[in-house]
Image (cartoon, rainbow, N blue to C red; front, top):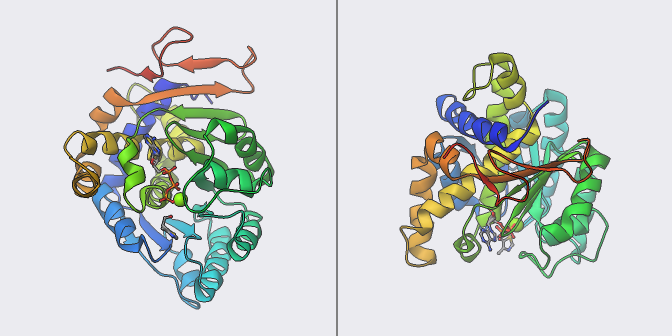
Length: 318
Ligand SMILES: Nc1ncnc2c1ncn2[C@@H]1O[C@H](COP(=O)(O)OP(=O)(O)OP(=O)(O)O)[C@@H](O)[C@H]1O
Ligand SMILES: Cc1ncsc1CCO
Ligand SMILES: [Mg+2]
């Protein structure tokens, strides 16, 4: 399937529209620092959050949710069991789920749990570069909840994780890198203010689960931009495309918010507004996406939509 930047950007705009038309129910098993921020971000983008994270409920709920987030930021014992229950139920029900292995590497309990859960094949794995490197077993891991490595330093780790678990791997940072092991997208949108509020990465994991939920509903078809109906249906149902869409929309909302804020406090408020107000047309106008495809004929071939080779990351159909 063709997934050049222009297709990815059109699909991002279309999935945002789908998500708002049919709000996915997103189950979050997440950390106590960002629970409220995450629920607000989901409501703002147009999804329906539910923080169902106790034993004997989590698994039941994963069977009916549109998407599931498992974030290991503050993994108390009950949440660890809830995560196991939900992941098992999501696998049976086909509920797409996202693993955010917060601060794994040096911390033993969450690192062991992340390795256990990843074996159940998350639909998407989302983390900063240090976390992805640690999960791939390629390094000792970061210094805590913030990344100490660049996203390109995690590219090989992301590819091997994606291939080992048939997952999409999303590495966040100044340029976000998303791969399914064959296709790799780089997204140059965003604002550093996202790293000065809590939940910048954690809420992105939840928004990714929301887009995967919208994507699962989208396989019925319907045109995305100038794509034909059958192509659009397959494109929108592709977890790689949905994961890219979540990051594109989220990071463009951050840019819009940064233009209206003076620091982290006003940014946090403006960001919720921007998640609610960002339009599919703004997504198409502002997205900066490049794609490489390991299966493409030219080695290392890179495409940037509507642009010559070696152009700046593409802004498609501005
Ligand atoms: N320097 C930067 N410039 C622009 N955007 C950035 C920058 N650093 C991170 N981002 C964006 O911030 C968001 C969160 O990424 P980050 O790598 O900070 O996650 P994280 O370390 O997991 O965060 P958390 O503290 O929530 O665990 C992503 O959307 C990413 O695009
Ligand atoms: C600060 C912090 N500590 C554990 S989880 C978390 C939220 C950011 O990941
Ligand atoms: Mg994080």
